[in-house]
Image (cartoon, rainbow, N blue to C red):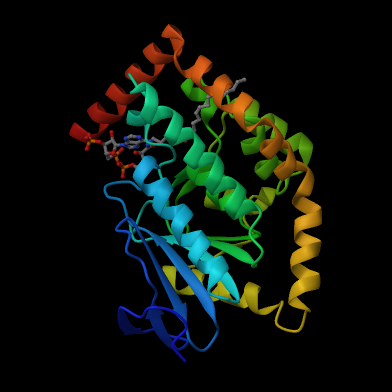
Length: 281
Ligand SMILES: CCCCC/C=C\C/C=C\C=C\CC(=O)SCCNC(=O)CCNC(=O)[C@H](O)C(C)(C)COP(=O)(O)OP(=O)(O)OC[C@H]1O[C@@H](n2cnc3c(N)ncnc32)[C@H](O)[C@@H]1OP(=O)(O)O
């Protein structure tokens, strides 16, 4: 049955996959007709850096999944080695003063929409997932990751501070003691370390298997009353969601103050250079 504007039909392992009305270019949403599960794919080369445009498209796609009665949402990447490199540092380095406000507001929106999503969510982490990438993954309810990649909140290593709501997502997954140590150290975990600490739930040998495992997780809710499940999830997450809703304006001002500090700008510039040098070698 057609549930939204259909752009194309693409066969997939589980059923016929319908590409939904993604007028956006940096994300796609495909809903499997058999399972009713939506796969939201980030597609912003080279590294799925979360810039204003990708954040806007993510917001629109999450809204689309909420609105099209999908049974669940799987977040993944079209890049074979990178889930997301986190926030696009170019948005924060020598920023345009209006755009950076929109950028941070869009990031807040994405977190509120994903962490607070009414449908079951899972991340198929098919590549590296530092910082903002880890934020997206830990905002989901389940994580399946491919071997030999890394995930974590590395902000302190960059001389920046993860906001409270980044920490909330992390703390919803890890025990407090582990979360505190990892955040203070800015630690990046390998897939194997992430599994042993509980930062991810399963390891998969391929993206296809990761998507299947995510679908299986979402399938565990098949016999649970959807309203009861979604209200339970929302109650469990309400404190953190409400805190950001209440403090959005202050959170934005704190970010702007912090990111505009000369020492932070200097640090971001050095970090960008080091990334570029690495890419050249
Ligand atoms: C108390 C008050 C608190 C208030 C709050 C204040 C502040 C909080 C502010 C910010 C929070 C930020 C969170 C973040 O997400 S910051 C981003 C962190 N991300 C990273 O550290 C990842 C950096 N990238 C990498 O490690 C590697 O690129 C990666 C492992 C992802 C991929 O490696 P690979 O070898 O495949 O690719 P590269 O050659 O390294 O990169 C290709 C290309 O892409 C550029 N690039 C990579 N990452 C970023 C990025 N995050 N932003 C912008 N650009 C990036 C890289 O420079 C290369 O570019 P080019 O040389 O080809 O031009």
